[in-house]
Length: 177
Image 1: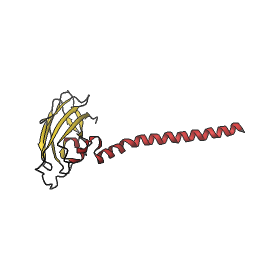
Image 2 (image 1 turned 30 degrees about the horizontal axis):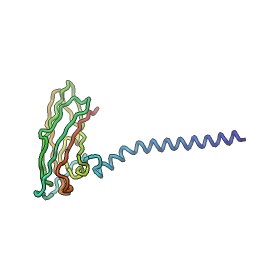
Image 3 (image 1 turned 180 degrees about the vertical axis):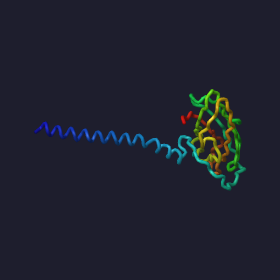
């Protein structure tokens, strides 16, 4: 009788442990999309929106200037040279600005990549509005091919006044089709 009660108690405990493990796995997998949503909404970790913003009739604030610096990197395995044609631009908040980046495939095969942007300081990421960006789509380059990649953006007039400089960084990652 005691062994049967002990066996029942062990089964209940094992079932509870299975539920705890299953719950922990579901929670762990839900964290990634939840983290992305929180970062996109709050601008945490320098994440910017991956959708185009329309250039609404926003008044240009000519009383302020903001320097936007551009940084680029290519992750291993991509086989590209990638860099901004300008290292920085000085803009007035609300002013639509265009800059060009250049990518060149230095391999002997077609390579597909995706750019992931981030902005520092993090507080500025919600205020950098991209109208047109190569980061919205995957980029495919044939062997030896070079492409100019446009970026059109503006800095929102709501940018906190203590921010005078921000850095827009793009990292290109290889993408398998």
